[in-house]
Image (tube, rainbow, N blue to C red; front, side, top):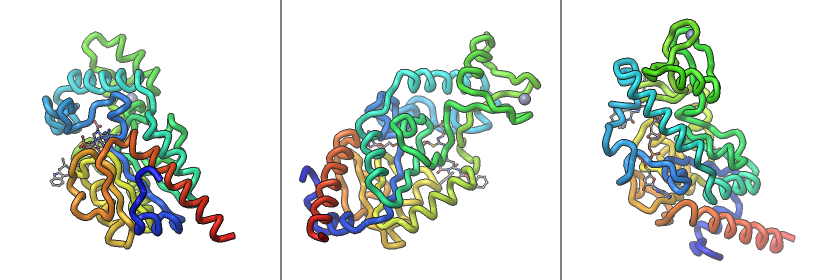
Length: 260
Ligand code: BV8
Ligand code: ZN
């Protein structure tokens, strides 16, 4: 066993049929994608409300569009890391698995995870605020490159925005409903790489715990939920998650031997 020494955790995981995971920017940090609040965070220089809100976009379209274009370029050059792949393995090991992400970079899907619940949308998708026409990453880039003022317009004249949830905007109803259900039904809930500061995503670990889930956190730093978790792994998700999954495989195979 690498890291799972805690008998209670082993007991919980041995029988768990329903596991839910909430991920945040920390899971993508080891892929080279800056987090929001860390030292190199996206929001150390510019506040989220200056950049990630409809008002900011409408009033400073070129600056906000450039910011998203810059982030897409970083993501284009990034790859999933061992933490993403470990979560794909965890999905394959679990009878009823839910991966809920706050990240908009699509790296979970590129690592092979399926049915990912994207609470805050996907930065690679864009749409017209006027006619709702969807633009693929490539289509948008084509328009963006030909707009010297970096104000991307649709063919109908409307502004084109990223398909992400901005502050003050509602989360996609289907996604948040599925996420709440997954949290409440879960027997084990992992909160990985999130400061747990942005609602309503940050409510999910609490709801899981209130409904009897065994709550595990993986984060090098303390967070807004560290005081309520059942088990904390202080470290990088790219290191911890692969070891966690290896230990779980050992637990499950030992369990099968004893059950025979
Ligand atoms: C809504 C998409 C309602 C855009 C994002 C006052 C109090 C409480 C709440 C509010 C309030 N005022 C307003 C609100 C609500 C607001 C909110 O919560 N604000 C916060 C700032 C207080 N929420 C909203 O506005 C949401 N909408 O509530 O609508 C409504 C109802 C009816 C009608 C209309 C509206 C919308 C929120 C979504 C905002 N969009 N992203 C974009 O990306 O540009 S949020 C953005 O920050 C991310 O998507 C992410 O979800 C979020 C949180 O960030 P984290 O993922 O946690 O990242 P962070 O940098 O904070 O932390 C990284 C962590 O990783 C750290 O803990 C670090 O230690 C750790 N780490 C680092 N490296 C590693 C690691 N961990 C593991 N391994 C590593 N290697
Ligand atoms: Zn349009």
